[in-house]
Image (cartoon, rainbow over all chains, first blue to last red; front, side):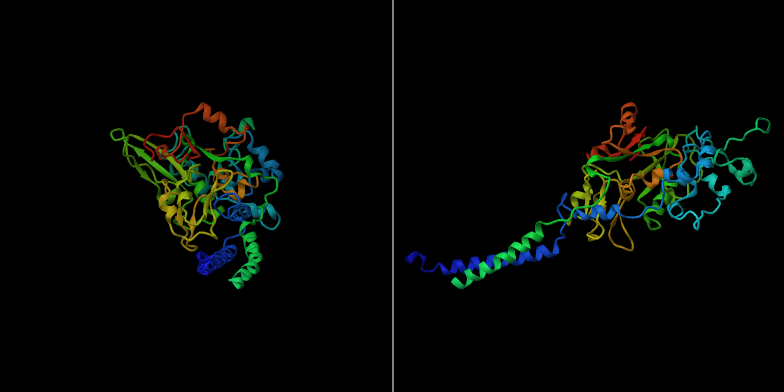
Length: 157
Length: 243
């Protein structure tokens, strides 16, 4: 039994280690978020938090629910595949409260040239004009209807 | 010695409780949307881009991106006939207000929209020391801004320059592929506002998504394929000079 005479040192050392480990585990338990590591080396709840943010652009489907008349007007024109909010801007708030929040009428003189002002880097097939020469300062909607921009001759109307 | 062992026995239940905290997790709630059913990417149809800057403005409006910083931006390339390896690139204010007329004569000019490539092997997520940025189960590279330290490792790790430090929050900020929209069944703000369809959100796990047919029938590239990042933003008819 002589060989175990000084075994107390080892037990004390083991106790210190065990206490240290315990303190580490307790602190870690409080500091590491509960969902950390659920899907990978990150906080799993972050996914749901990021997904929960509200949207600003309502999406084309939402516009279609109410504005069937505009859709009908658009469907055969060159702008058929341009989403409403591409020109009208983010309108999720209007979709949530259509009565009190109405979007302002757009200034076609500023809006149309964003896409249609001539630029050498634009694809050659894309319809472009040098706005100063083309309209002489008139607003685009004097002649073109933005929802269906081709000019229809009076006789065919 | 007996005293220590008795204390040890008393402390064991406490340790068990602590371990429960370590192991436990609360499940994420996302009704009608299953992360395992999607694998998101984007298609950029370069010949369709008109450089209108709608995507940049839409992104800014949707995601509160501070002025002068960009989650997405549009570059204009001018490639001279005589020096195709050294294109001249400009992107005034990220293309947010459109582009001035082309000055250079000859050569070719075109627009290239840029955004996070949502790499399947993303260098930026690998360097994060705290696990604040990660690839979500559906392949979107996200930042957990409540966990980010703002150490900037990820900013310098991204080979595409798609990350920045938010000037007020002092944490990493980047394109989230409008994660809050795509999980609600909407497309991204940039795709929603693109007037020519140059940008299209693509779900590579959805067999009905037109991306599959498009990839089969078009000459599609990713940016910096030599970096082996497995980028998921696909560029149709990308010019070889684009970096």
